[in-house]
Image (cartoon, rainbow, N blue to C red; front, side):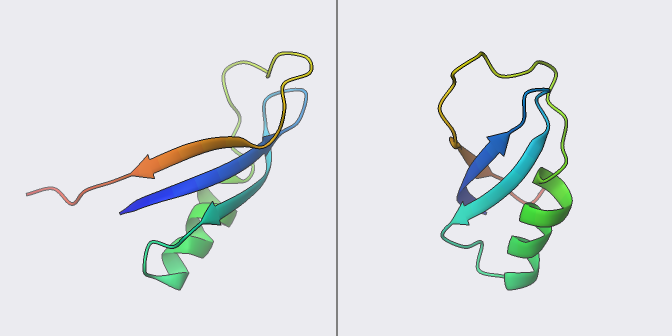
Length: 65
């Protein structure tokens, strides 16, 4: 899996919205990443004041051998 995500944070560092640019190839996995993994996740530190949103990040995962 290799997909780009855009995330929006609130002032406390919690992800309030997430979208994917592209797809993992599995609609159920795409939905799970957006709604169950990213949205609601609390980061360790809040974003700096004035930080532009969204934050773009690349997610990459491989199956264990």
